[in-house]
Length: 221
Image 1 (cartoon, helix red, strand yellow):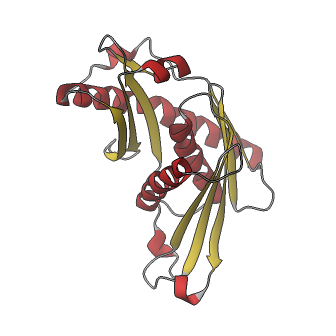
Image 2: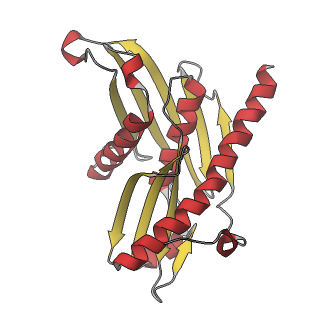
C-alpha cells in the first residue's frame, strides 16, 4: 500500500536533540532525547575478548540495557534482543573477526517510546564510533487508537490508551523493513498502512541524522 507524502505534511516527530562524544572512555557515544524520553548509548570496540567468545567470521556483538532503576528485568532483556538484532544487521561485523563490540544503553527518562529512542540513539552512537556499517537505521512508532485511527509520534497518554502499538525500523538504503515489533490487536490492512506511513516518516529521522553529522563534521574541521 502506497502512502502519499502529502498525507504526512502536518506530521512532526517529537522534538529530537542529540550530542555526540558525551562519554570520554568509549569509542563512540551519543545522548538522544525524543520528546521527554532520554537515552544515552556507548559503543566500545572492536576489543580483544576471551577465545571461547570469539568468532572467526565476525565480531561478537553484546548489547546491555540498563533501566533507570538500575535493576535488570525481563523488559531489559527484550530491548537487548531487539537492539542486538537490528545493530547486527546494520554492522559490517565481518570486518572485525575474533573481536567483541559492546553497546550499552542507559535509560535516563522514559516518557513513552523508550525502545525506538534507544534504537535511534544506538544508531547515532555507532555512527560516532566510526565502525563500518552496511546502512544506518531509523525507528518510528505509531499507535492504533480506540477509534481505529493510526497516530504517528504518539504521546505517552496515547501509548497508554492505544488499541495497538506498532514499531518499525527501516534501513537508509532502500527503506526496507529491518525490524518490526508490535503490541495489541489490528488487521492486516491496518498493519500495512501503518508500516507505509512510518516508512515515509523515517525520512525525518534520517534527515535529523544528516544534520547532526554535518554539525559535528564542521566542529572537527
